[in-house]
Length: 360
Ligand code: NAD
Image 1 (cartoon, rainbow, N blue to C red):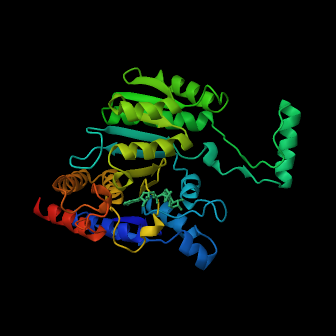
Image 2 (cartoon, helix red, strand yellow; image 1 turned 180 degrees about the vertical axis):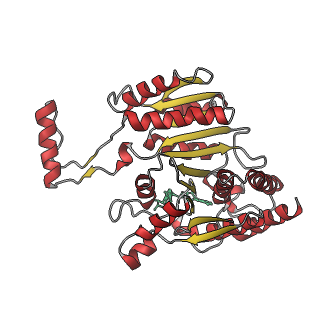
Image 3 (cartoon, helix red, strand yellow; image 1 turned 30 degrees about the vertical axis):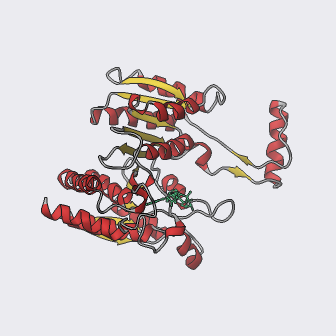
């Protein structure tokens, strides 16, 4: 019996979490869920979207499964998702994007893995608000030390990229390549423009790559990478990136395999692992039992692998693949017409997977 922290999330989180727990139970792996709520609803009740009890639970059990959490845009509290990654030092965001036969997409046979640095870059949360005293002082300092001016009505976000965190994520990418028999690592950056942050990322990646002569290494500028992935995704294998590019390219890669409804993810630290779908809380679908639970179910599959339950993970992946290929119980986002009345509900997808697992 394993104990795992479950953060159901908000928006569509609770319904896809429920579907995922049911499916995981059907694999026969016995899990006691320590259910911990966080996010918007908890903020409204407790004044803190990420109470200490949630962090204590994850630190105790070392493994967590999480539904999406809403972040207010522009104002309000900072992202709980980002806070969890920073506070728990979950330095790596691993997002495999693999084609399933029968999924509605323009591309076949995609097998890309996105490895995103998770703690630094423009996501570090170091921001200076327009008009504040600190912002004025920072602008003055920048003008004095560089001779460059910044308009006084600017807001500023800082982009730190360190050798320490870059080495860690790039080493992870190469070790992952070896462990999973992958051939190539591509580092993505904008080092031509941001020489001291992305330039450092690239230089550090090149240095780490030298220690792994058995794995190919190359780099791409992020804008070119976007085009290349749309035109020739088959040329790429593992892609390692700083935080912001990693976020954007993850969604692009999810688009290649049929959308966010199919893209799972893991946030990994040295000891703690937190699994969650790539997608957000899609608030407009909340409570409708309509959205695709597969990204979260596949995140659950990654969690089973992490727990060492490789057989159960394989059976679950096979059951999911079979449901997708049959196409009878798939949600609206996997239909060519999103209004197709034959689209399955969230719970119907879970039921279909459970039936496959039972008959396997
Ligand atoms: P989103 O991922 O919630 O939605 C983007 C699009 O994908 C929408 O059209 C949505 O309907 C669709 N979609 C998402 N999940 C789906 C699913 N399971 N099945 C079918 N369709 C699905 O992104 P957004 O609208 O930019 O963000 C909404 C909220 O989620 C924001 O508050 C954002 O901050 C938050 N968010 C949270 C996480 C996380 O918890 N890790 C990640 C991304 C966004």
